[in-house]
Image 1 (cartoon, protein in one colour):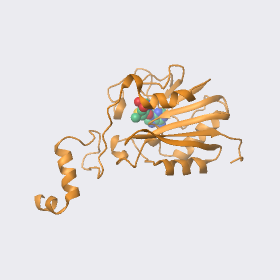
Image 2 (cartoon, rainbow, N blue to C red):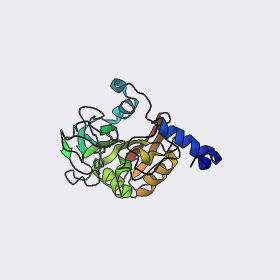
Image 3 (tube, helix red, strand yellow):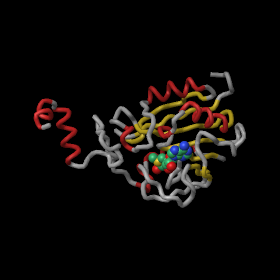
Length: 212
Ligand SMILES: C[S@@+](CC[C@H](N)C(=O)[O-])C[C@H]1O[C@@H](n2cnc3c(N)ncnc32)[C@H](O)[C@@H]1O
């Protein structure tokens, strides 16, 4: 093993990171990310991700995958975890859900078409098997002219799948913008880094069906 590490500086760097404990605790056992990623220190009371999404929370809307912290108190929190339930993975680990509705974000049948002014989500889209269906559902419940704004881990910064064993997809601003544009019903307004080497935001506007 030592001989193998000596021949590969990259493997050796990973082994050093693992020994220092700087690999994510949630990484599936037996695997190591080639590009380990650590959450940056942030001021929880003025979290840049909440500050970035808050301006879009005007009117009636939902925070999908709210976990233990909604973007604003007026958002309707939606999460797989019922209110008060303890999270087990990632940032929600050991924290109690503040969801107002227990539901999967890819099946929002409790809302009729165009009922909401906005959908925001923070570190949630990467958790769905079928992200196209999820984005279509977020577009369905949003009124024409309303906003769908999401923050996801930035795959350019490191191997984001390893941050949480329930992550299923990884995105860059370019890949997510392409996906959102292809889904239909949503027009990408902007993408921008929110927390350097950690996350980015994509903002989309609901457009008339077929008016892409
Ligand atoms: C990484 S946490 C983010 C929590 C919070 N938005 C934040 O940024 O602190 C992901 C959240 O998404 C929720 N989640 C995962 N899959 C979901 C799904 N299919 N529908 C709704 N929520 C889901 C988890 O329960 C968890 O609370």
